[in-house]
Length: 191
Image 1 (cartoon, helix red, strand yellow):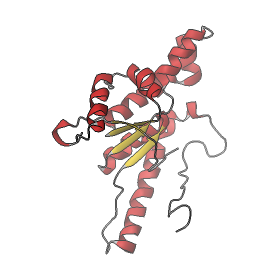
Image 2 (spheres, one colour):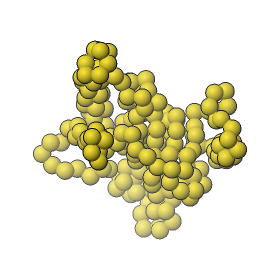
Image 3 (cartoon, one colour):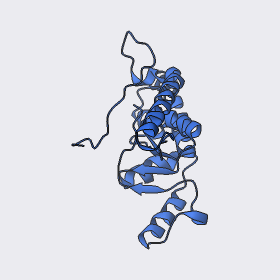
């Protein structure tokens, strides 16, 4: 199928249609995106089913979000579709808040007003809680960023990593809702 192997980008319209808005102002429009994405997924599942599965809908096996706004969206989609969620945070709000506060140029209230940082952190906590797998690209992301989150357990992460290195399965009765992997791949990006 060429370089894309059948993958393609679908733009789901949401929010104001007449102007660009910065990512910090997308939060009130997330549900509208989720509704549009769910509608698209349902239509595509039906079409794929007709094409390759004898009329039976073909559903995604997992759904993957990048960054806080997509994590928020994918948590809702994962629940609606009853499929596992994967999340890649990249840069995280609690770490950004700490760094901005250390600079001393803005108060917590000013930072929140500018960056909607508390809503971002709420979305990241939701994504962490809803995810089957958290994908990270660096050890720093695990130890210095994710450690700031209520739902993240650095000791559990180290135990899981040690089990993986020894070739012991982390699934089944030993598997909590969280696995940290140090590699990066993309299944679905609702951005």
